[in-house]
Amino acid sequence: MTRILAHYHIGGVAADIEARAAALALEQSIEMPLTAVASRYVRDEVVARVANIRALGPALHEVTLAIATATVGRDIGQLMNMLFGNCSLQDDVVLHDVELPATLLSHWRGPRHGLAGLRTLVGAGPRALTMTALKPQGLPATELAQLAATFADAGIDIIKDDHGIADQDYAPFAARVVACQQAVARANAARGGHSVYAPTLSGGPRQLAAQAHIVREEGVRMVLACPLLMGLPVFDELLRHELDCAVLAHPALGGAARIAPPLLFGKLFRMLGADATVFPNHGGRFSYSPATCQALAQAALAPWHDYAPCAPVPAGGMSVERVAEMLDFYGRDVILLIGGALLAAGDALPARAREFVSRVHAATL
Image (cartoon, rainbow, N blue to C red; front, top):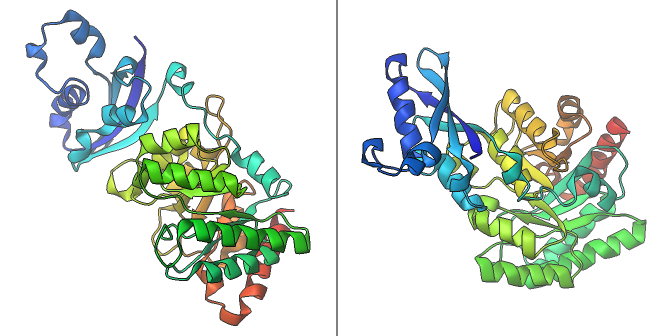
């Protein structure tokens, strides 16, 4: 039977780590004492094994478990359950990384468009892409559409809803999508542009299916989705059965579980089909370390199975003044997302948006 290799970082002293690792193997597989298992098949094939223990510091160890692939089936929810279900409740355990066998990886297709497809979508060559957000929530659909037109006229590649904009009474999904999509289309026609509007999908399975129908009817070419808010199995089925447009994954709720960001946002979101993945950049209003950001971008872009590269989207309080620094750090295989810092320009917003576009184009072409 093939095995998944799951790597955990566990706090605790060296004297206890072997017992902790053995307990973790049982907890993440059969949840009962091994002595109570009569079935030889279960003992030999189903019970997780401790594959390796490595000291990372005086009170920190990496424990690698070999988890039976058959216990997952082909369900992302069950995969997460087997990797981190019960032990996520142990506050000194972090799911650091996962090595999945090709037989399991082949069940998920990865990004349908990927970074190359996004560049084609917005008519860009091998340069970094630009993105901004419609905000704040509370504005009516007509005002959000006017804002979308301003951004499209400036040549920003991707204009997304803020993730807090959902299906509220002041800007219902259907009305907002029609207004913003048409506003961006008119701006594109006027300037010969290729800007893309990405509305936020939200709600339960029925609501998401209804929103996906509107997306298809209106010719929307990209959407924003929060995989952890809607649930990974719902996200998986939505991309598999309801959408053929590009998908931008948002990290909301990602800090609620101790899963390493490069694994969660860089690898797992990519595996499920995200074409681009948003994460808090270092130096922002809430941020990861530069090393974590670099590892996340690499996880999204590096060759893996036969998945297309997923575009990293560093965000969270970025400014136009940081464009050169961010491009020096990430290179051109990136989408730079600046939202609130553009809107803070007030009446100078059109000029500030054009400056953002100009700086990115100049630096990466």
